[in-house]
Length: 271
Image (cartoon, rainbow, N blue to C red; front, side, top):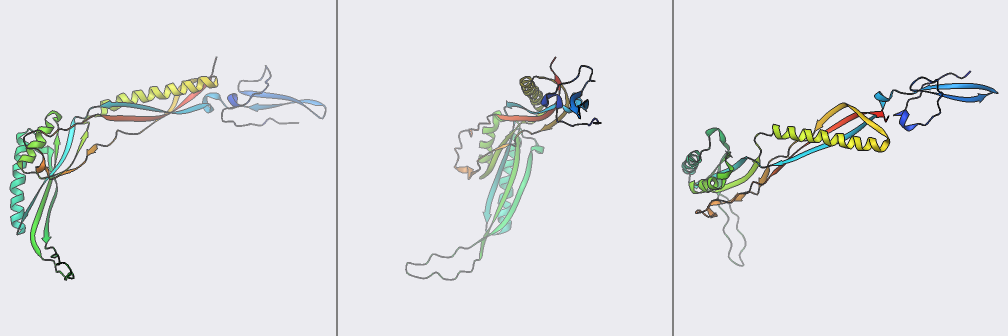
């Protein structure tokens, strides 16, 4: 006697073609054959299609939007014979810079000190005359340098060029970079999520149609991906060299936000 045995397939109704008896229960396959001159049957229980027949796809949703916030990193570098002199000069210049920024409508919460550094300046070895060897040189402190950097959050990009021009005139002589970002992204990301789900459904239906089956309900959804980080503009040093009578031209461009979702759908037999 040949006993029934259970066979597990990834998706048996799609991958295996069998001849079944009319009276066989749903999801069961019954095979007939001769063993020792006797007709016997072997019944295999096939897995439930709604549980084991699935398709996994990845959907992408993207959209572009103009940034509405700029992060500016500017600084003041001063020098003096003593650390006190260099620091006093820097404090005066930075105070004037912050006053101008306030006059331009930037809130106090949007101005933050990010670096303050006091460092000695050492003497350099004298250049030897032609044909003479280099003499040993013991560096000595000849002065001090103070560097103070602040980050300014500009929320009116239409006046960004004028703001940069104003901080240069106020005493900023270093600029460490500009980056742009979108302040409130959740609504935009929600739109990208809708696009990502629609893209996943489209891909699943296309692939299922080619396989002769129908897409059912989603069994799992997993989100991944995020919007890109701010794009920095190349740092510019010694901003005093910039034209003082014209606003600095700045182009914010657009930024792309994206969302990725992985969706597992149920597959059903086409009717």
